[in-house]
Structures are given as structure tokens and as C-alpha cells.
Image (cartoon, rainbow, N blue to C red; front, side, top):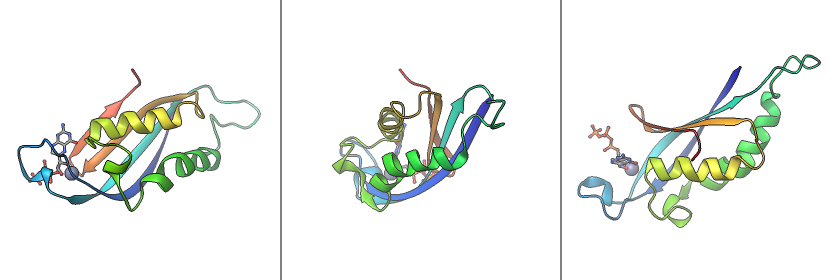
Length: 115
Ligand SMILES: Nc1nc2c(c(=O)[nH]1)N=C([C@H](O)[C@H](O)COP(=O)(O)OP(=O)(O)OP(=O)(O)O)CN2
Ligand SMILES: [Zn+2]
């Protein structure tokens, strides 16, 4: 079964080698969807407690990206590279992690399922 939870963060960035407007400093209200693929524990009725998932995602990702300049952590801060960075931060603590979705705008999204 797939369990998915939504998060958001506001951040600034620029893409230094972009041929258009994205080379300029600007910001996005990013949406992040974190998915886990696992079995339901018959005792808890859960794959993971949403609260326990959030403790990890907030500590490892949201607190580090929200209201930050992304290029400090991810020099080429495309949605693709942000998704890979988030995956690498979460996977050691969330072995059931199966998918990371990063929406840079309402209609621009990347989906990453690991290497
Ligand atoms: N493959 C990617 N392409 C682009 C990325 C990216 O991360 N991966 N990023 C950008 C810029 O960051 C840019 O900010 C994207 O936002 P924007 O241009 O506003 O989005 P739209 O494509 O929806 O542009 P509209 O002018 O609003 O139609 C660019 N490309
Ligand atoms: Zn951008």
C-alpha cells in the first residue's frame, strides 16, 4: 500500500545557467509529496504513523529548506536536483520511501523514485 503526505516550503533560488528569467533570483511556494510503500502493521493498522513521518520530514527537509536560499545547499537548484537532495536526506531514516514529488509551481512537477 502507498501512503503519501503533503508538505510545503517557501524558498528562494536562481538557476545560474538558465537561458531565461530563471537565472534571476526569485522564489517559489514549493509543494512536496512524500510517499512510502509498505505493508500495514496489523497491530497499529498503519504503514507508519503520519506524525512519525512528519517528525522525520520536518527535521531533515522542511526546517532546512523553508525560507532559505536553496543554492546554499543545492548549487544547481532545479526541481530535479531538489528532489534528489530530498530523497538522499530522507531515505536513510525512511527505508519505505518510494517516491518524492516536488512541485515548483502549480503545474511544474518532478517525481523521483530513487536512482
Ligand atoms: N526541468 C526544469 N525546468 C525548469 C526548472 C526546473 O527546475 N526544472 N525551473 C525553472 C525556473 O525555476 C522557473 O522559476 C520555473 O517557474 P516559471 O517559469 O514561473 O514556471 P512556468 O513554466 O509555469 O512559467 P510561466 O511563465 O508561469 O508559464 C524553469 N525551468
Ligand atoms: Zn525557479
